[in-house]
Image (cartoon, rainbow, N blue to C red; front, side, top):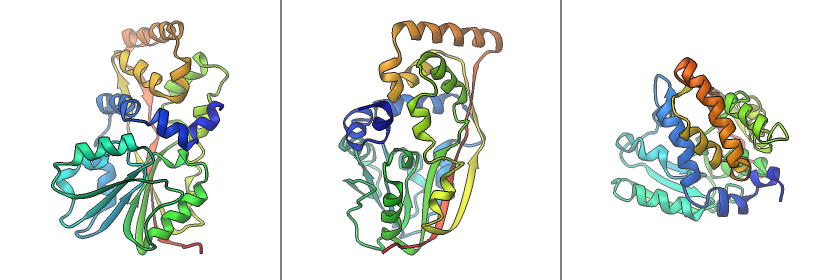
Length: 276
């Protein structure tokens, strides 16, 4: 299996890259510790959901449940949240973290391309930073519109072509050939092309942009991040780590931090078009 296939291969993703939350935690740690922004990411996403009391909510590919863990005190009364992920390990992590939340969550392993729910079941569907992993996004979007109510809203976060540009440049230099397969794959659903993929399925689409960057003052979180990626798991040898340490250390000594661009945002789609 080549790297390109790994990025969109459900079996590999659930048994390797996302068998548990460890790789995801390494990437989240870099962002949570070093992001420079007016508002943290999870509250920013939650604000845009504008949930109402009593709504039925589905999250697809929810990972470790961070969206709800970071906003647990802000969920309106009576909301029922169905949490799904392809990985049983991720489901277990989220279920444990949210067990004492006091809110009504249900947990289920599920593939977004074949959702095990009746038509028109949900007021809100969330699929953040995961559609670029889906091999058949048209099928996934057809399933999402099927389970949404006619007045429902769909929210899907993704990244742009310049997201983590400086980290990607490290990968280009150290993990040849360039660009890396992961770089290419994750642009399959991006800020630049996501609208065109959503338009056959929703009449109304808005893009909300998140303004931020990273100012990283330590080397280990960058190494942990690179080592958690599909490319980096195999390519981050001791020799390459030494090269990265030398390059990053020089910039930190000169400027105080290693600057990393971010390009993230979220599409908000409504008025679903059901494809029968």
